[in-house]
Image (cartoon, rainbow, N blue to C red; front, side):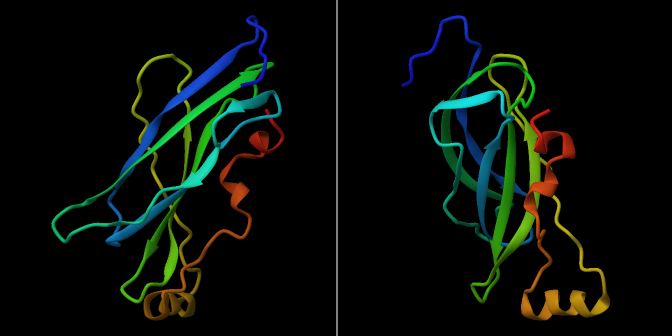
Length: 158
């Protein structure tokens, strides 16, 4: 671990990505990234990764991942407070992977234990032709520029 001045503000994030619910597919996994502004420096841990693929049974509605994370940041200022950026991916019966949802969750400002529920969304096909392609061939729309899920202010560290 890097040598850190005791007067430097620090944030420790320790927890797990528990799972997902309310998705149609039985096969789900999650890609995640913790995004921060330019005032923040990661001292320890990995700020991105992905869970394993969970295969739910027909009865259950919850995909269980229990993927741990342990991050240690130092910061120069509060601007650019950490946020979780998620992509939930699904596999159809033919093994084709497509995006099931994008989501953003802000790390709470208070110390302590917290449960963060992140609502996910995905783009809808804009024409009946693309809707038919999504239904028949599993080709679902994705964002071309995934950083668009963050607002313009976060892109510049505000």
